[in-house]
Amino acid sequence: MGVTVRVPSALRALAGGRAELDAAPGPLRDVLASIGRESPGLVARVLADEGTLRRHVNVFVNDEDVRFRDFLDTPVREGDRVTIVPAIAGGA
Amino acid sequence: MPTAALNEVFAHAREADPEECCGLITGTHQAPFRHVIRCRNDMTLHHRRDPASYPRDGRQGFYMNEQDYLRAEDDAEARGERVTCVYHSHVEAGAYFSEMDQDFAGQPLFPFPDADHLVVAVIGGKIVDQALFRRAAESFVGRVVVHARS
View 1 (cartoon, helix red, strand yellow):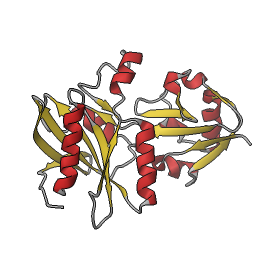
View 2 (cartoon, rainbow over the protein chains, first blue to last red):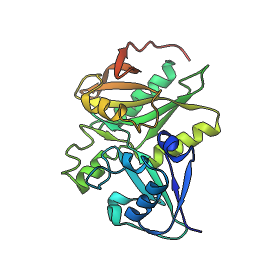
View 3 (spheres, one colour):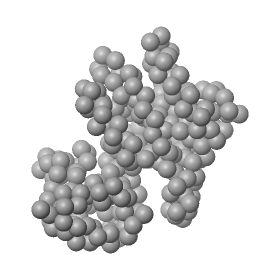
């Protein structure tokens, strides 16, 4: 059992139509890099050019928002579930 | 939009004041505004943790709790419904679709690209206006909200 990455509906076309991808455990940065090799273009929508998370996207490891952990250095372990979640926000 | 649904949104907006409220409305093609689902506004939480990245707090912005909206989406799907509207309130400001609203709603990964956007204005603790916005090509067009008895 490795790591499961849940792909939001807006990105599934870039993942061959798949809702979930498999990856090896490691720092989140490496997990995203590995699915990026398999699905070019997908990770480009999640990470900005400087390698940080894009403003409109959040990532959860299981139920933990990585912004409250170690961002892209957050460890992802065997059996963990990574969810890419677009942000819904706004204001006056 | 059914009066009952609007009243639920208004109640949420009044209770959340002085912070903005946010939530989703789900329904079917035949009945697009059936269920109003409140979601938590995490903007103040993010502002306190990282004020540089999140300069606004919940009084000037909303950041929908991700677990709440994912659960709402899953529950809607289980009922044979979809998210038809994203709502939020403005406090001490009008019912317009702001630049920030449009920025997030227009981004390529926005999870509900076909949903309408309902903005409710709360001024002095009272609901003073509401407006619905619908995507039209690259922009959003405002429409008058017509109450209908549910």
